[in-house]
Amino acid sequence: MGSPVGEKDRQDREAQVAVTLTKPFGLGKYEVTQGQWKEVMGTEPWSGEDVELAKDCPATFVSWNDATKFCQKLTEIERKSGTLKANEEYRLPTEAEWEYACRAGTETAFSFGDDKSKLGEYAWYDGNTKNIDREWAHKVGSHKPNPWGLHDMHGNVWEWCSDWFGNELSGGTDPIGPRGGSNRALRGGSWMFPPEDSRSARKIGLNPSHRFNSVGFRAARSQSVTETRQGMSKTEPVKKVFKSVESVTNSIGMVLIEIPAGKFTMGSDHQEGEAQVRVTLTKSCGLGKTEVTQGQWKSVMGTEPWGGQNFVQADKDCPATWVSWDDATEFCEKLTDLERKSGKLKAGEEYRLPTEAEWEYACRAGTTTVFSFGDDESKLGEYGWFNGNASNAGEQYAHEVGLKNPNPWGLYDMHGNVAEWCSDWYGIKLSGGTDPVGPKGGSDRVIRGGGWRGISGSCRSANRKIIDPSIRHDGLGFRVARIQSAQ
Image (cartoon, rainbow, N blue to C red; front, side):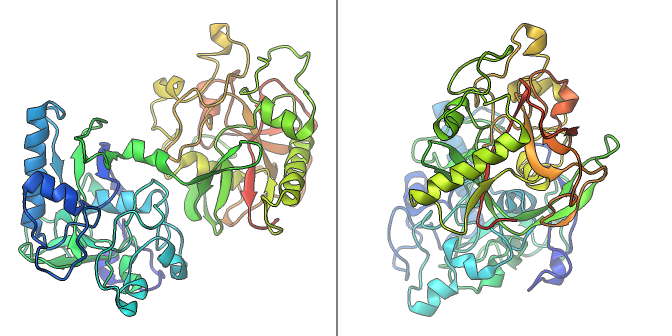
């Protein structure tokens, strides 16, 4: 939590601390709206003030105390209706929860990267409101969401957090801030403020009794539940919100998930060849929501390389296997040509295999655990096909894509089903730095993700294997990346 030394516009109170959040929580997809406030509280604190009146605009002119009362009353209403369990509650998020959700796995100044010139695509701030005589909080969700599907985490209104304000961030496990103080913490920036105030790490303090036209809040719900009161369906568990990332569908029906630019630690301390390195990815990319399927392969290549082979389930929605690295690369090149000719792809864009760094970054989806779902390998069967629920269970084939739970960014089968080709030559050490592409040459390529024949350990986020690029196998496939320019 906080910002690194060197981040533009960084403040001293943003000195970084490590944070561990041990419990999932639901967080409002948007700020609490005027319509939601009125339904719960029966009042209009913004009435008579200089605001835009609309049920989908943020509820403003609410103090920290007011926001806390809203959460308490909503808790009571939902408990009485049986929607909320006795040990569950609505509350304001802690600063740590707020920033964790805002960052959505990113380590850049904003959840979309470091380039604040793009802020207008994601937020209302002074440049597209106050400075052009649109001086009010705008309808929620009017701009792009962050990678976890949360809107307006940058700008529109400052958002109350539960913490007392402190000049130093509180780190550790499930931090809740200072024990006392005179001001409460707010996050997110607003329509009145410049871009730097909308950074993920920016924090200010305000007297909890104050009310303004640029201050609102969003609700958090403790415990990992999915039911919500009608009209508050925007409050969803974070693990569900993760799936609300942006995606596009291309001309052959392949869904691509938008993976944001960002920084992460690649590798693990688990075994040799995985020594950790820091990686910065400066460009977003579209990554296949699933492995390339037999149906997609056939629509592009017109062939069935898996035909007549053993240990294959022939189905349009099963992964295309028995494809070498060269085969997979040819598929990407041909799909690029098809989409350029049809006008679906710009001249500067192409399909290709993901690099090792892009693959692991997308697999981890902001996590630092052994798997994208945590460290408990007993849960692997909920997320992937491996020997425990496939080859050792009499189902000796790659299964239909997307049958298991996705990772936090909505990608399926990153753990298991088929091992996936990456673009890199294999190197004994991981390549770190900015936009790494691996060694300049070699004899073998990298595969990632494990497969239906593999043990659970081979499905770890950091696991990497070496293989001859000419090899074709029943447990080997790939997914595509779509990028702005070739390497």
